[in-house]
Each structure stands twice: as C-alpha cells, then as structure tokens.
Image 1 (cartoon, rainbow, N blue to C red):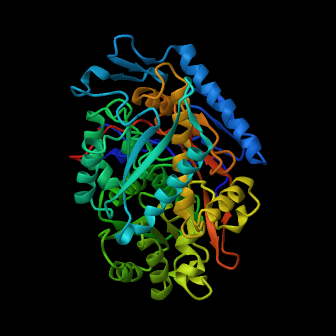
Image 2: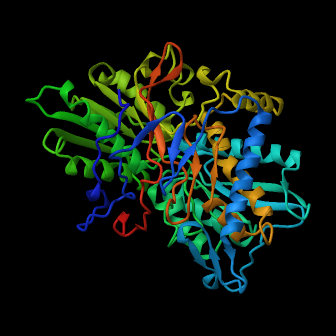
Image 3: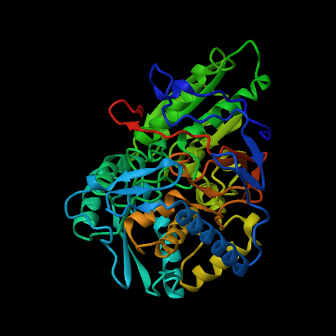
Length: 523
C-alpha cells in the first residue's frame, strides 16, 4: 500500500512544452509527507491540525480563533486596498491592479445593508445533474448561517447571503449567458462556476470584471493562477494533474507484481473535453518522464463525450485490450456506468487495478443502490480520495460534525444520503462563509477586495475534511487551497471506503499554472 514518501520526480514534460514547464502546474512529490495530523505550509512552517473537535461548540471556538489569526495577520502586514484605491496587496507578494478594473466597477456591488448576493452557474440537469447537489449543500450552509446571524461585520450590520443558481446542464453554451446574467443583470458580488469547460470559457471575463470567482467546482490546475487570474480560486481538492501523477507513482511502486518480460497494459476512458484531456496529457507525460514506466507501460485510451448516454462502446473496446490497470477519467453519470460496464465485460475479474477519478468519489456513485443487486460490481475499485467526509459512509456515522449536518438537513427535508455532492457542497461553502466573516472585520468591511484577500490568506480547518488535510492558501506562494489526498478501495460488503495508506501531503508543492487555452498547457 502507498504509505511512504512518493517516488516522483518533477513532471516537467506534463506541460506539453519543450522548456520543462508543467501541463497542470508542476507537482513535485519527491519527499512528500504522509500524515494524519499535520501539514507544512509553502514556507515550511508546520500547520498542525491536531485531533479534530468533538462537538459543534468546540468547532466554532476553533474557527473563531483561526479567523482572528487571519485577520491579525492581514492587519499586521498592512495588506488590503491602497489609499488611492489602485492596488490590492496580499500574502506572498500577491497584488491586483485595480486601475485595470472596468469603468464604473464597484467594490461593493451585490452588497446591501442586509444582503450579499452570490450567483452560480451549475449543472442541475443532464448527465451531470447530480453535480447540482453541490448547490444543495452550499445553500444549506448559507441558509443555516443566515438564520444564525453569522455574517455580522465590524459595524454591527448583519447580512444574509442571497445564493442564486442558474442551470447550465454542464453545457458551455448555456453557462456563458448564465455568467453574463449574473454579472450584468443580477450584479452578483461573486460568481461561482462548475465544470472545467464552462469555467475555462468564463473565467477571463469574470477576472476582467474584477469579480470574485471563489472555489470553482472543478479540479483543474488553471485555477491556480494568482497573477493572471487573481479573482479566481480553485476547489478544495487536489488537482486533476496531481491525481494523474499519483496514478503513475502507484503503478511504479507495483511493477514487481507484473511479469518482468511483459509490458503492463494501462487503459483509460477519457472524457472528451478540457477536464478529461488534462488527466490524459498529465498521465502520458508522467509515463514519458518515468525511467521505470517509459518502456514498461503500454498505454491505450478511448474517449467519450460528456453528453453520451452510455459508455458501453468505448468500454467494450478497452476490455478487448485486456488491461492490467484501468483508469476512469470521467465524471457524472459515467462514474457509475463505467463500474457496471467493467463488471459486464469481464474487466472486473481480469484487471488487477481499477480506478475511478476523484469526481466519482463517494458512496452515491458506487453504492449498491446505484449498482443494483448486492453491489459487488464495485468491490475493490480504487480512488484517490480528496478527503471529504461522505455523510452516507458508515465510517463517519459517529463524526460529530457529520451527525450535526445530518440532523439539520433532515429537519429541513433534505436527504443527506441523496448524493455525496451534498457534503461536497458543504466543503465548498465552508471556506467562503468563513471568508465572508473575515471580510466584514477588515478595514472597509464587506468588499470584493477584502473578500479576495481573505480567500488568498485562508488558513483554517474544514470540518468536512479528514484530519490532517487543511485549507491553506498564501498568495503567490501557494495558490491551491488543498493539496492532499489518500488512496482508498471500495468495500462492497460494508458499503464503505477503506484507507490504503496515510494521507499524502503535497501542501505548497503544486506551482502556479498560467493556462494557455490555445495549446492546452501551462504557459
């Protein structure tokens, strides 16, 4: 099992360029730590997580301390909007030229004395409809905090978050006008997006408009670009590139399990868009740069459109290759479909290692209620978990925060077991809610610039992440809020994921990624 330090070198070729840059933001995992209780910041300072609180009251006390530490750090360093209003400064040398914002731009647009308007273009229908449950979790947490009067600023004003969603069905053609409406008609304080294709097509405009674009619900490396896209921050998950690199390292460490005189056949099914392509290009680059894998692995892949109703045809083709390892570079309804197809076409019995991508993590994709029968089709599948607690997983039945969430949701008529993405939404909403409170305590109060500064200085403990995984950004020095995960396998008999090794801590190791859409690589 993968429990020690990773045997990764710098994945230079992953960028797709000749000068050694990385396709997805270079991730160096040589010397990466494995931990269950602490992490290390980009500057080398340990940020000890310690044992998680055992009551909501203790959680609240911890968060209050962490918020105060962030506020103090910001004030002590003099970060914020300059006196002339032309520059925003933050940690790690991060700056934003506010003079480049459009004429008529307002730092407080979307904010009144009583509300903060946050808009989202999200998938509520189509093959990615389940991802709309992120919005269910986000809205639940905002509504809870609204009822508690949580969003109080230094002047005593108490505001409520007005969270509005627009369905884009995971379709870029619908997401673009949704974002336009949120910017121009709804005049949202901040705009959320879901999905790599839609986010890549809209984040330039959102940044040009100087509008906060928090925690895009996609794990692409492009969101770690604090210089060219200072208003965009990425998901509290390891990136797709990091995940692909970990797949490669996993295979390296298991080469001795396969006949030395034969190549290891690795097969993948790749979603045919920017999301799947990043997985694929990073994994191919890893194979190419690895002295262990370059001449040992025979890599084959098929593609499938995100809107395809099934994955039967490409999975049949891959089964004919008799792979030793299969990797699903998919999302949405295809998560469950690929598991079922592998059981039907024989790959479940003949393929040594079967992987789902982290977009498919959670019991709601692989549980027996999804797969049918006794659920044995999913037994033994591997994932690189992002460390989010799955509320329907019995392993977290006694977790105090999960218990609290379940009770609160059920009281509101929400089924917490309906989708793992409901809990995922809590994981996204938590840092945004905390940043809004921090924002209100900074000079100038609730403004877009203060909110963005609070996000770039985030250093808190999420109750939805496993102990040892921390929310941490540090301006230019660390643009990714989470860089940790762990290997798990699905235990169908007990309907739970089983840890395989310790948490893999890559905090501060993924470099910024200035994504060039014309070549599909970091510049």
